[in-house]
Image (cartoon, rainbow, N blue to C red):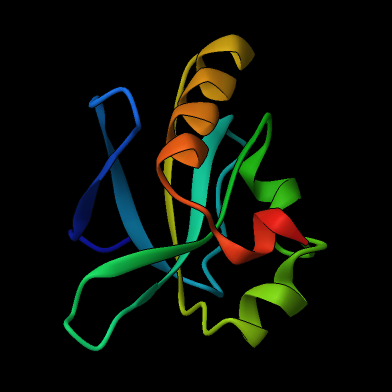
Length: 106
């Protein structure tokens, strides 16, 4: 894990803190939200795919959207553990309402 964090804003104005990880990071068995992301030319992060899962360790290593993530320049996983499924889905929906990641459209 790195010490770098990013505050991702939802459409509601709420900001969610995510830890930045390399794509090959091994995660613990924890529920959480995640964002496959890349840096823009100006150095800002942009989402390529936004999701939530009951188990980061099982979901991320062979994610079905990885080919899309790679095609769209994704270089990192931003992730954090979080509470129940309803909370995770609300956060995911809030972020998706603010961003239009290409791999969430495919």
